[in-house]
Image (cartoon, rainbow, N blue to C red; front, side, top):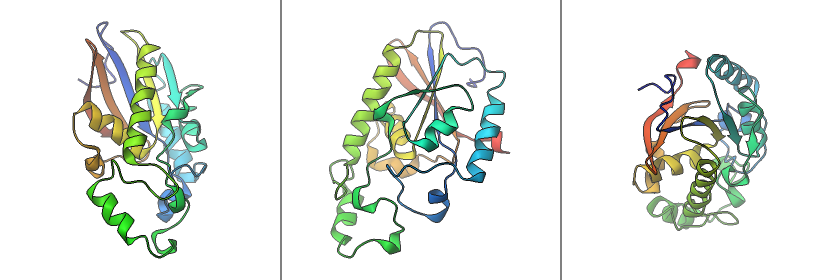
Length: 207
């Protein structure tokens, strides 16, 4: 069932949207908590996203506090900011391209490849910590919502991947398998106390 259909009275519909493009995305930087605004392409993506929602009733919009997420969310409605939706804290990687990183990080990257859930980025988070606060944020949103409503949550690649994988009972080390282009929409349903994934990565508004 398309998320654009009517919301059933027995469900809560949750749409997870990745923010629009930033210069950091196109430059291949580790962005994380770095507070970057949308670039011109990102603004265009957000405008197209907003146009898609013009005839869609949305009961509430939530967003990460980072500028790129708030800008994207605002094309739909003024968002309620939730701190726990911030992107993975990437510590000493923040703002750098891979070839700009300090030397000596090879053991970290090997450990992260094997076990990102418990491997800490130097000066930052583990992916498990990111997942836990993102999942707690989802529970907060669900508690503040009612069946029959449609809510939008605008966040970041790793945050959204963590939520989707947790809902699918899959390990978060599979985060690279969750394909999310900028402003992609992933559809979830909350029914009978269970959160399930309906679809991932819808970008038909960008065609």
